[in-house]
Length: 289
Image (spheres, rainbow, N blue to C red):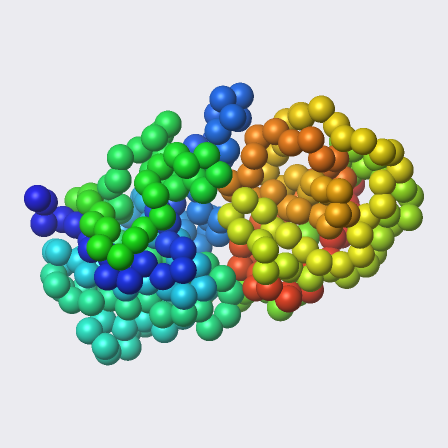
């Protein structure tokens, strides 16, 4: 067994392997997947000297605990959280050297939802369709981590960034999502279309990697019945029969039968990945490019 490996001591609520995902396979019914907060994942890779597409760990709310079998450089970013090595605090958003056999504890998020852990050399699980990402919808990629999981690591290929701490955006206190009209906006009453971009919503606790769900005013349809299944895209805002919008995130289905009232601009989605339940959400109408 290789000594370049990382043992999972505590997997936390949901920790997965993520990279840039597997775009380009929607015609096969395969979602994009990949890190929900892609800028945070790319930054922690830079901090440890990895290429931006190297596989990292994405934690959810409660962090994780890891024990490397070799000396590694690590960095934790995304949602701010306490980080410790063998019980001693170390910096968040900075590169940290961890000796073989030491215990790296990534604590619960102080704010935000998802923290990212990069390890020098990257997580080297077997790629599927060109990506090492876990996809919760299709089941492709490695399963979510469990206590006792051992992850192989690659060989370090670059020098870590020469910064003490890297600044990162704070998780949103209020989430503003720019949205262009969707292909089925005409399935809703004019009052519902106005409410969608003028009324306040809040992030629902039912949100996950597949979609950001919100609570707020239900959107009334102008047409009864359901659509035949049609293609959907990252950021599509689908409205199921209960009238509550759902913003599709990285593990979204590639087809759906509920009408899409709008599409969120891709640059706004990393903030959506860090919005805790109860965060106010405003959909801001913008013109198509």
